[in-house]
Image 1 (cartoon, helix red, strand yellow):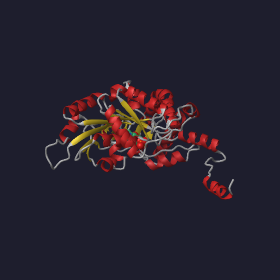
Image 2: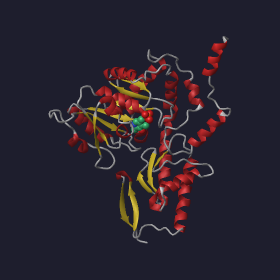
Image 3: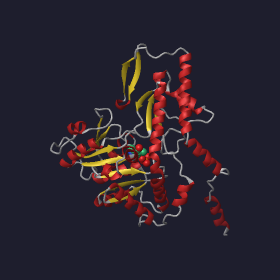
Image 4: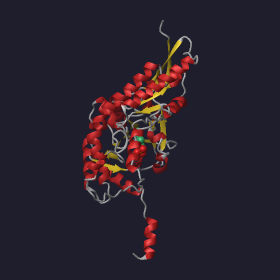
Length: 399
Ligand SMILES: *Cc1c(COP(=O)(O)O)cnc(C)c1O
């Protein structure tokens, strides 16, 4: 080799793998099985990559066969004309919003807690120039037509930004949006020329829990975003679905946003593996989340939002414990547990042992508090009504 070139070769090359990479990966998988932070942290398995490795090798900007096959499958599954594979759930939502909104001024209505409002860095304002109208559900659980109707801005007053789009989320914080309420909203939207987008990052969970086919859940919407890297445990990707015209335009925006990807076959293959082998695991995930909730309830821990699917929001103050005590005690366990705060997420790789270990930690903390003289507030049993995310105080039952 030319010595000057050899020098550059030396500068360019890199080995990312640690000397103990295999063991490191095993250790990470073990940590993931004991982490309640999110379902995004699940690790791709050897079996998944074994399958994905055999996928097609085309450049997806010019159309890759496995990726096209995935898009065709997801479109058919969702009962829509077409699908587009994108990098993330955020991109799925933002491209959808951008594609729907064409002639400003306009406003988008969504739940104040929704991902598009809270966790997408203000993307609807940046990419689409949209004014967002955020609503708090009056039933404390999900938006209904009753909440939405008075807030819709119609098109005649030049002071206002007409509502062109409503975005809903299912599941939201792990809770299931009743389909009957979605249908009411969609009938109203259709009758008033308003488009409807679903952030269905975790729609898989709603389908698994309510035994409703995906196409039925997607039917009321003009577009849906479906994530593969959350509950399904795929490493990368989301599909958006909608009409052919919508997806054609969305493909344009995907390119503009810099997310026209090249050899995506290995990603599409991972998604196909996840759909086939991981989706069937979700009822077990939900059962484990319910076990966690029931264990917490038995100990008297407050439940802020019950385990309708894979998440439990809890409040430990009802047993005299603070969040940080749980977090620290969990981290100090001989086999450490990772606890974020009030939200506990159960995923396809959560070990049942981790759930029992976590419950033991609550039990010990509670016993310590009682021994230190802590007693529940006088005369009342503090009960938390999770659906409304507010405390409901009930009288202590007679002794
Ligand atoms: C995670 C999530 C997203 C965004 O997905 P990313 O892949 O993290 O960008 C969108 N909507 C909901 C409901 C989510 O939970």
